[in-house]
Length: 358
Image 1 (cartoon, rainbow, N blue to C red):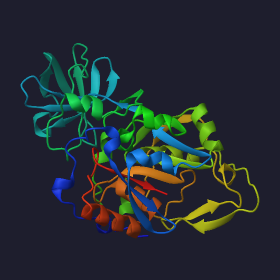
Image 2: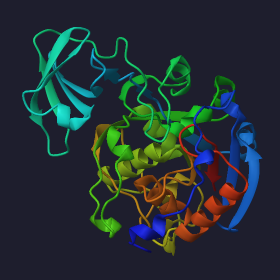
Image 3: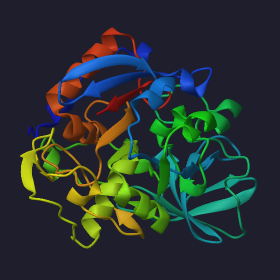
Image 4: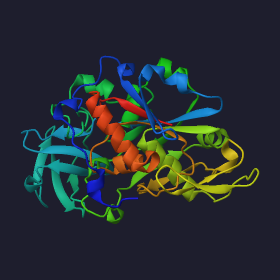
């Protein structure tokens, strides 16, 4: 594997960064990667069901994005409300930070917010004398590479059709392509990971192994765990689902049902991955129903225990998400597919196209 940050870089023309969603969710293009054959195929997302086999299970993240972005009444300060600490106390990100040092105040809906603390990550802990509902009148917290204000369309489109568990400040974007009709065509289960602002944090260390991953809350229900454990092939919809499933495998009791003789083979990313002599879940780690926090950082050399295939969008250069997908597909193969996607004018990032890695 390569631990150099510069080895996860690529050049992307700005005009390929999708600024708006497609007219219809299912209109996205889908690049299909065959890891075994090192082959690429160009398809449409609406063709997803043609890749479904007996015993497959798609696992999706049902987190719901909060309209967590608010501006002060004078428009001078932007707040991103991350977590309610008490009825009158919130953890926030603010811009510009120089205006909101300890003791500084701003008003939202005529409620005074005062900075009581600045965390080591630069977050502001703000308190008020009366309760504030920051999500009433808030807007969707679009990623920084979308160079426009959020609007009413984003309230619907920067949200999956199956969003249920409120708590994210960024969308699990691989799920944005699904319609209720497509979802009904595939076997599926839901897990939850509340995507935090750390998903956009850059990796600053040239040695990626020195990067410290942000922590995010996740949960796996008993129903979902049972479905996952009995599936022959688990297809994760998005990098957030990968982190949930592989975290759950790491935290579960390390017990397996062994059928036949197991042996170790290199995975696509170069890590040893356990494979059994029989297909299905018997040759993999079992996961338990659980909830907690994960700061799992997946990069090449990681051994995947649960995930067999991945549906994901295209990710930023030098990002932890690109490193995760590199671990699954193989870095050189993945960067080659990105080069082809650029040549074929795919749309990139949150509102862009997707790839299915088999």
